[in-house]
Amino acid sequence: MIDFTGKVAIVTGGSRGIGRAIVEELAKRGCHIAFNYNKSIEAAEELKKQCQISPEQQILAYQLDVANFAAVQEMVKDVKAKLGRVDFLVNNAGITNDKLIMRMKEEDWDSVINTNLKSAFNFCQAVSPIMLKQRYGRILNLSSISGVVGMAGQANYSASKAGLIGLSKALAKELGSRNVTVNVLAPGIIETDMTGVLSEDYRKKLLEQIPLQRFGQVAELARVTAFLLSDDAQYITGQVIQIDGGLAM
Image 1 (cartoon, rainbow, N blue to C red):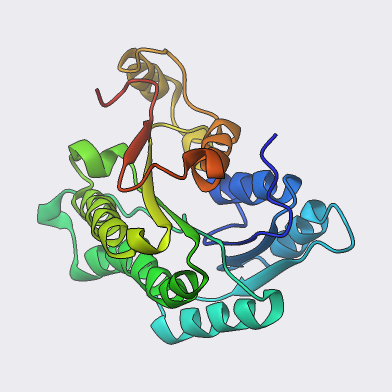
Image 2 (image 1 turned 90 degrees about the vertical axis):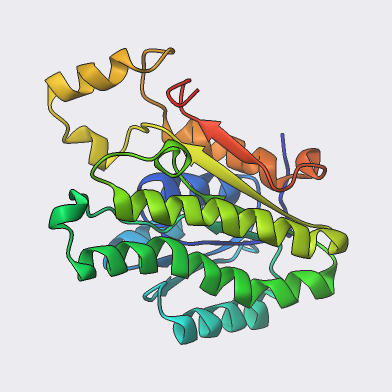
């Protein structure tokens, strides 16, 4: 089992869905974790209690807008001050606001780009000096198959997720000489609260396009996350790992 005892991770959008599964996975492997959330203080506090498996383990929660550059700088500074280092960064925070581009308003574009892409820049920019000084770090950015192949009605989302791929490849080249890896996870259809509201007919149409004939589970994605953050993946950087059941081959 991969052991992260003593390591420190920052996970964005960590209070629900995929982000929560990643926080839980890293926590059970002994990692100290700082995650951000947007709205529910109750959910964040419950997650903190659930994930602390030993008295020494630190689980920190921060309520902030990930698109706010100054707020992100303050969060990372506080994490470094309290936990001493930052080993892992998982940029998971993201939203959708799907519309055909002819109906898409400027604010629809800006909100998705800022939450999905600018936030990743904010956190990468803040943790890079720490990781470079440590000569060690792992950055993992969560894209989507929508960023790999593009999806009609998701011009803003596809652009933001494709942007994460470009950002990651550039950073992999900038930071690699100091033993900092940067990779991308591109999930397909994952069972979350969002997919739970899909109609049965639409779910059936989606499943017909997936060779493995099922949706992915958040736990599967979280385990791949742990692998890519581990020393077993220390020679992997600048790569896009698709977790999509073969949907975007």
